[in-house]
Amino acid sequence: MNLPPLLQSFVLHFGEMGSRWGINRTVGQIYALLYASSQPLCADDIVEALSISRSNVSMSLRELQAWNLVVMKHIPDDRRDYFTTPDDVWQILRTLAEERKKREVDPTLSVLRELLMQRPGSEEERHAQARLAEMQSLIEQLTKWYDDVKHLETEQLATLLTLGAKVTKLLDAKDRIVSLGRKRTEPKTS
Amino acid sequence: MNLPPLLQSFVLHFGEMGSRWGINRTVGQIYALLYASSQPLCADDIVEALSISRSNVSMSLRELQAWNLVVMKHIPDDRRDYFTTPDDVWQILRTLAEERKKREVDPTLSVLRELLMQRPGSEEERHAQARLAEMQSLIEQLTKWYDDVKHLETEQLATLLTLGAKVTKLLDAKDRIVSLGRKRTEPKTS
DNA sequence: CATAAATTTCAGAAATTACTGAAACTTGTG
DNA sequence: CACAAGTTTCAGTAATTTCTGAAATTTATG
Image (tube, rainbow over all chains, first blue to last red; front, side, top):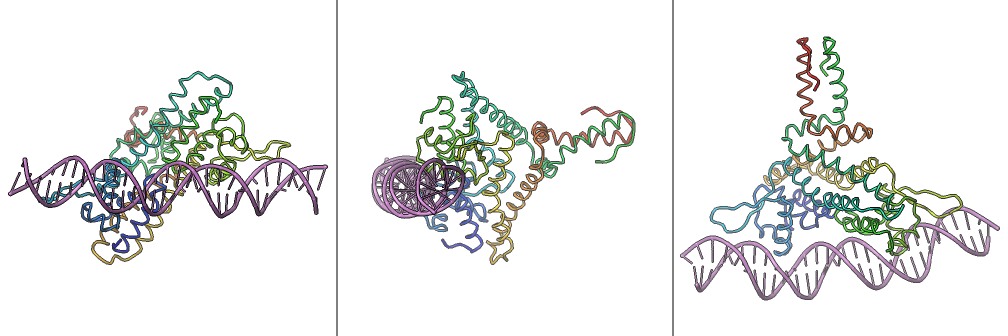
């Protein structure tokens, strides 16, 4: 591996974190490299930058494509495929959320639904189902929220983040404002 | 493994998902078993239920404790340690969020901060730093939101979820209400 | 449609991670 | 404090995952 030190640290860190994020080391490193590079890279650039085999690069790029985390680019008069990551970090976040949900949440939700269709054959099963139902309910509330929020434009999403817990206060505030309004009294501005 | 079919399916599913969630199969299975069981279980109960070695159970319980995902209970006149999961699924969610953040986000944030302290030694490094800064900014916004929201009581959290994207509309509504209030006009109720 | 460049596939090797059983350790009790 | 019940540790083994290099396939072009 022969990269500028800063880039190398970043790449190595993503490699190490890879396993915690459910991807492998190489995939993490390649992603980091593409993310931080100023230019799209082709497979051989990656082979050279990370000192890994050509086939490993091929497999890993395929994995990153399956995650929709890289985009392929073409350079005029060059047959090779070049890769980058999308520029917009908010868009990357949306993709990550979508893919992780697909892989980590949806399968469980469908198993829960299936198991909750069954008739319990014992008291122990009845209790288990009650617990599964709690889990299902929570996950469905979370995914409903996610489905709602994922369509937001970046700016709105940022607003929502900045608002944070104040949302609940805002709700109270609204109620107060409304009732004040009804009494035709001047409300405070938040 | 000799469990009621429903429980067994649930346990096996959690085992399979384990790797995607950054825990291993056994840990996933034990968690599922404890989660759905009506009674606390001791290590030997788990050995029997899942047909795995005593030492594996010990190691896996240790891991689950490190995640704060199980609680130890004691039964009068019984020296053995018994384990359950917390009852409240919302509390479980909070714990999961906290632990995943600690393992999956915080280390990266600290690496990013460190790398952004360095002075870039080339144009390539300068560009890389700009990209890292974008990533850092996004993660900091997200963790700030999280730090804010994590203190909410379950009921408020549920409200926030139900609200979802409507929050942004609510904001608009508030503005309208406020200005209407100023004009001493009867505002609409949401 | 032949050729050459680029890419992918895949079987086996290497590396990593998970699991077991035996031994060591801890803790409560007579 | 000796014993027994319970728990943990750890070295070796098993299982899984990742990586490689050679061969096969695809694709653009003259």
